[in-house]
Image (cartoon, rainbow over all chains, first blue to last red; front, side, top):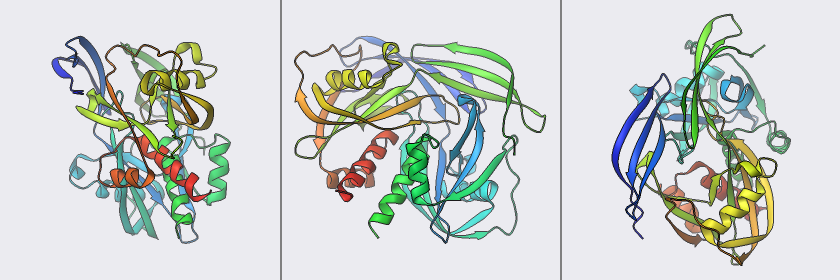
Length: 183
Length: 183
C-alpha cells in the first residue's frame, strides 16, 4: 500500500529558540486533504555515562513542561557545528553537565523522540573511561542541575516507583541492563 | 540545590488539533529571567504486542514530521475519555491498528517522550494472548498503515540498520529482549 502523503501547503506558525512550529496541508493517499502540525527541532544527544564502579550518572534539573525536576541521563540540543558528528555535542554536554571526559564514546543508536508531531532526532551514546575534565566549559544560561550516580538495582526501583519517567533515560537504563545480562 | 523555576508570564501561541504551544516567562533560582517554549500534548499510549509465536507486531505509517513511513509499535493519542485509565486507549488502538484484542494487557512503564520541550506522557503496555477482534473499530481519518510481525533477531538487525528509529519502538524491543534473557 502506498502510504505517501503529499505536502501541498505550509504555514510557519512560530520560530522560537528551541523549536519551530509548522502547519502543513497534505493530500492523503486516498486523495483526501488533511492538516499536520509539526514541531521542528535541531536534534539532540543523550549519553549513558557509566562510572568505573558500574553506576549510571543522572542529572536532576527543572523541566518547565512538566513543572518539576526530573532525573535524566546527560543530554542536550545538537550544536549546529556538530551536525556531521553529534559525538562532539555529547562530549561537550558531559563536560558542561557532569564535568567528566569520556575516553571511550560509542554511538548506541538513534531515534525520533516523538515522531507523531516532531522531527527531533536523538543520538544515544555510551560513555566509559570517565575522567575529570581539564577545563570546565560554561553551562548554558539557566541550566541548574544536581548530579549523582546510581547502580542498576536502584535505577530499576526508581523506574518502578515513577521517580525516573524520562524516555531516553529509561531506554538507556534498559540498554545498561542488557549489557549486564550479556556480559 | 533548589532547582525550582517560577512562572511569571504565559502566552498561548497556538491551539491545535494535536498540540498547543505556550511560551512562558520564568524566574530562575538565581533570580534571572528566561523563556520556556512548551508543546502541550494530551498524552499517548504505546503497545508491545507479542504474538503466540513470540513476534512483535509493528505498523508502518506515514509520519509528516520526518517525511517518510516509519515502523512503530501500535500507538495513539490518549482519548479524553480514558484519562483515568489509558489501557482503554491501548485496547482501542490495538483494534484500530492491528485488528486484535489482548486477553492480557499489562502496564510496563510510563515516560515523558521529550521532556525538554513537551509534556507528552506515554504509557507503555505489554499485550499478550492476542485474538481477532469481534468488531472492527473505524480507523482515524487519514490513518493508513501496514502491519507485520517480526522476531527478535530481525528487530535487532533492523535497529542496527536504522530501519527502526522510533524511540518508543526501540524501547519496547529492548524490553522484549530483556524479557527473553530473563525467562
